[in-house]
Image (cartoon, rainbow, N blue to C red; front, side):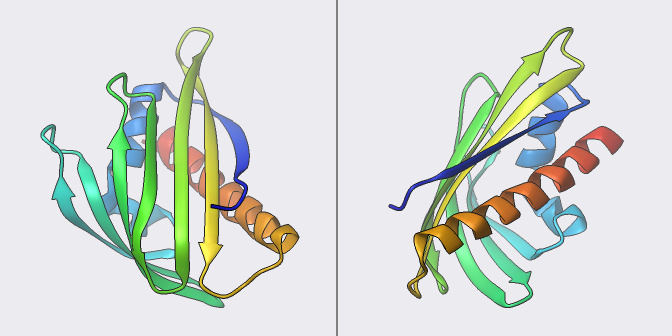
Length: 147
């Protein structure tokens, strides 16, 4: 797997609310602009999505792919990895939440690594990952703060 990129943002919402937004994968098309469709294929014993099919349309990059999710028991972390994709050979990622101060704000750290089926220079890949993470974190922040 290629090197991963990491980016953080502070969200003015408690960790529970942010994780609820992250976990509501069916609603991603409402607030994550590049996500056109999600389909939860499997759920874990607590009812959380554990296998999800995405349809992505980010302009020149379009893909249909399936991710498997692993939810931390403490509710502060979720990670995922690719099990099937058209444009991607590999993807792994994580949201890690860290409550700040009195619990009304939370630092959200997003880690992502993507390997496309087509070769891409490492510098360009990392730049694309950073753009994806920046947009995703800003959209997550907007959604969690307006919930």
